[in-house]
Image 1 (tube, rainbow, N blue to C red):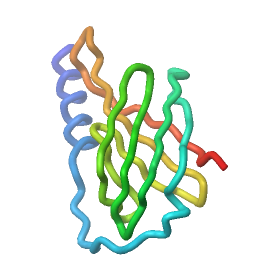
Image 2 (image 1 turned 120 degrees about the vertical axis):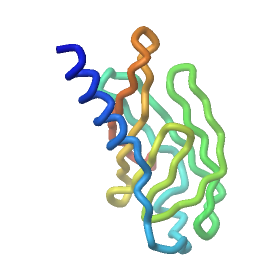
Image 3 (image 1 turned 135 degrees about the horizontal axis):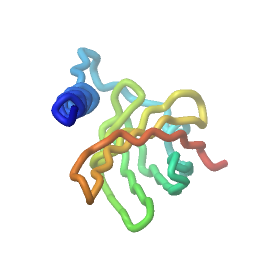
Image 4 (image 1 turned 90 degrees about the horizontal axis):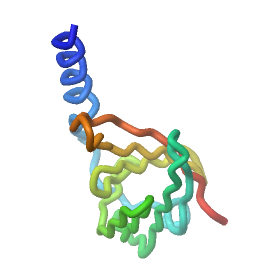
Amino acid sequence: MADVTSILASAYKANTLSVAKSSSKYVAVDPSLYQGSWTGKYASNKPFLITISDVSGFRAKVHYQSQGTSKYQDVLIKDGAFRIGDTKFTLTAKGKAQIKNVVTDPASGQTYLDTAYAAQDK
């Protein structure tokens, strides 16, 4: 039985973490849709804060914070989304975004996808 769950976990990981190629081009975005602070909580009640600044064309500076994790990165926005480390930000509507974060369980070494929703602070 352990072999079956191991195979399923590997297949799930391979399918959810693979990068889908997009044939669309980078285009300038409306800075007001992205710029500012975005807050939310994962299902585990762990809060996060994403601060997006200096949006110019399709480029932006992003700071991601969540319980001891702090990442700074220059990002490229394409198809309403960007990645910062193991976290993907996808704009779903004005002032709303879906956040997907790859988490590694330190005890087992297994990875899973933690999905949450964020709201843009006004």
